[in-house]
Image 1: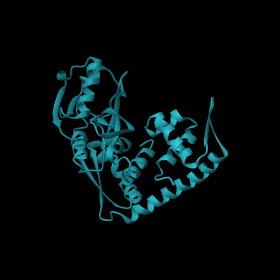
Image 2 (image 1 turned 90 degrees about the horizontal axis):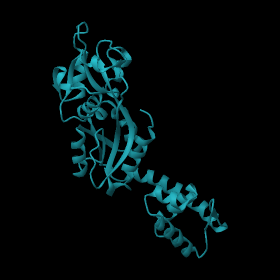
Image 3 (image 1 turned 90 degrees about the vertical axis):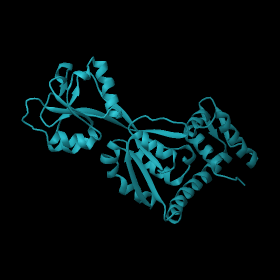
Length: 300
């Protein structure tokens, strides 16, 4: 009998993609490996199951029978996996690590659903992206959600959602800002180690803006501190107090009219949020459930 379901999963992917090469790309294995696994099944069954054609593949009668069996097995395994999650590691706490903007303003909305899906407690660490990757490597957290591309070997990175950084103030300001407009503001900036600061500085340099000419009121270490400082700034001041922030951080205040946003004329400050986990845990049922759920949230 077949010793594992991996070869049948390969068979199912070949049928789904109608191509050995596309199946190999989806599975992350080489095309010869796909061919070898299909041949293993055929040798085991002592019959051909797939015929290659110019416009794709064609199942033999035996292949069609196997396909129906494999689909039933796949569904049974998926259902069994859900049941297993309910009985193993009952005292296990799933720990997620998040950078500041994600951990404070995005992830809390979904922790309840994550807990429900894995039927376990979920704890969250919040800090800088580089610190979260350190904790991931040290096995202190199970999954990291980061806003800074801290790429290291041995870690799987999945692009999650696109984030946009905008200029904001507690006073109405122009919707689209030219270089000269930026000099009319008082600024509160992130610390120099912040990815938000680095990304913003790169765009300002492209615009020909020298940030050293800004009127800077202060430098703060967290998006929450900056947001609160600007909310409580004098709304009648002659020079608006501004900063650059992820729209996720100020979404509620924008909706309530407490803050006002603007974009840079002819420029957009964007970045990807990433989901990161150790390669050695890419088949872990808990990690897989959490990652698949997060990836299903196409637009946040």
